[in-house]
Length: 117
Length: 111
Image 1 (tube, chains in turn red, cyan):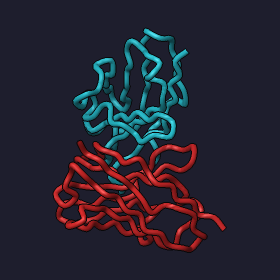
Image 2 (cartoon, chains in turn brown, blue):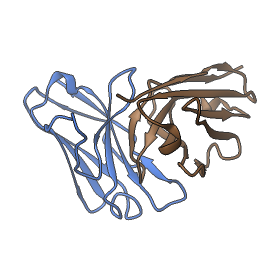
Image 3 (cartoon, one colour):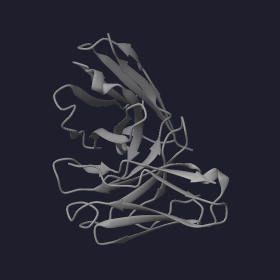
Image 4 (tube, chains in turn purple, green):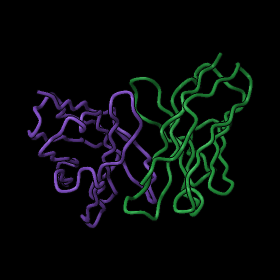
């Protein structure tokens, strides 16, 4: 059974930084495409970033230049480094396995990031 | 890239069938057979229900079915049950600057 467990969320001031983690089991992060998807309070889903098995990365325009996706193969973990955070980045961030062509198969339970002064 | 258009809410009585629409453009829904549907209960993570327009992952009830016509995809829930009450999101691969796009979500209420 695949399990994805996010952590690292919390309250941060505008302009601050935060690193989210996603611990995977039942799935090998290095040989899968992995992604982050977020959901602002009471709003819909928004794709954030993806990392492919060849380590190439892609980002939504709204986070490009501020967020960095990475992985740690020995730890079988996925990360999202978030810098220059803005109020509009407030959301639950989900780690998800990405199959192909915008298809997300397995999802974590999410971690809440709140950006506020 | 604009979000796909879904009705804000759809309701039905137990046992009935309901259909949720998801309208995009020829650059996303109409151009590719890569439409997915996700179910999300309050406070829970999304769950994949339909992919590639009409395919069901293992374990998903056959009461859920998907289809597409032109730029509009649809999710039909047959034999509506109380447990089907949730938010549903469509998504599509796109040829635009982003990998893909989600719909705004539809709240399904079982009366």
